[in-house]
Amino acid sequence: MKVVTPSLCRFVSVSAMLLIMPGCSWLGLTGEDGMFRDRQGEYLQAEMTEPMNIPSDLDSFTIDDLYYIPPEAPGERALYETPPPPKPIDTRVRTEVVIQRFGDRAWIVLGATPGQVWPRLRDYFVSEGIQLAIDDPESGIMETTWVPEADSDLRNRYRVWVEPGLHAGNSEVYVLQTSDDGSSIEGMPITWPEDSTNIEREATFLVSISQYLADRTDIYRGSSVSMLAGSIEVQGKASIDATRSGDTRLDLRIDPERAWSQVTQSLNNAGIEVVGSDRDAATMQVVFTGTEDGDEPGFFSRLFGGDDEIEERTFEIDLVETSTGVTVRARVVDGEPAPYQQDLLIRTLNDNLV
Image (cartoon, rainbow, N blue to C red; front, side, top):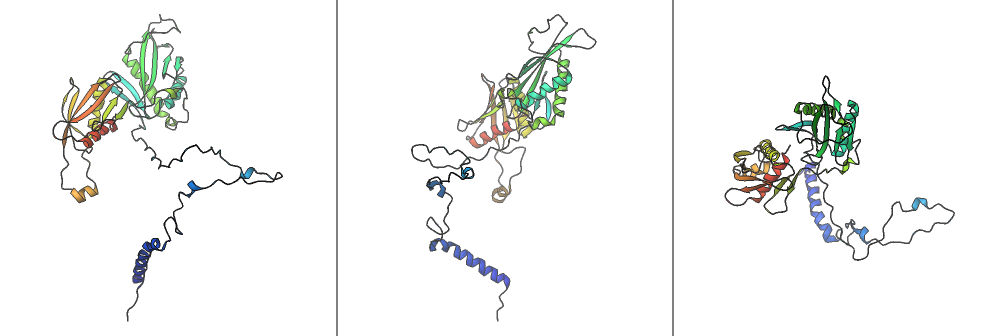
């Protein structure tokens, strides 16, 4: 005599269900005319009915349309398409306030839009008791009045302005300083020099602003945003141009000297080996495998081809000066073109810009 165990019963039940499910379609239970048909798109064929008539002594408010229904546009009804997925959160937005330096130049970089930064800059001058001669949020420029220097006959004046950062959602704050012996008439416009007359004064003022912004953690919540300062361009200074097949480019709206420094730093951040460079020709040679900093291959790569070595390709990176800044291009030095690796190299450079 055989004993039917519970595990055997479960096996038989599951097997029966697997056999019955395909039969539902054969029996006519599914499909467009079946009992369990897909009703997802039936609303598109719904017919409009006459409005319900309510006696005049009753209130019809509760059954009125809650939203305005526009009339149907003339012509054939367009097919609905699947909406695009939401844009991913940009992970390149900074969450701290830092001072970036290049040569004698320095500026503040922080993860907030110019519209968020502007009210905090204004609060800084109020907290320091410094009056502003110019406060122009549309151009992103502030200029102080003459500030007396302690134990000296000199006076200092500062120009502060906000620009978008390399990536969207970031901002850069710059400071320019000038001084005089008190001969300039208060309230009269002045001619600003290209560089600060006292680099130490500029640096001290820049550090003071950066410390104030770093303490204002609400800047990232955007609790106070200047609508006028919102007209300041928010698009990042770095953008990808993928309009040419196999020739993806990186456009940088910065000067050539800074572009060279930024690209060099980006290669270092990504762990990409630089085998040669010519600053005068604005070219670099790099070895790129398609992974950043020697990333380990994934599970399926190890399973189906873990023993295969990743092909290393040598690329030449060219920095071409344009009317708006610098365009970064990459091409394979020898061998067959590698459009996928070329595109990935340019995007890796962009992602590692700081």
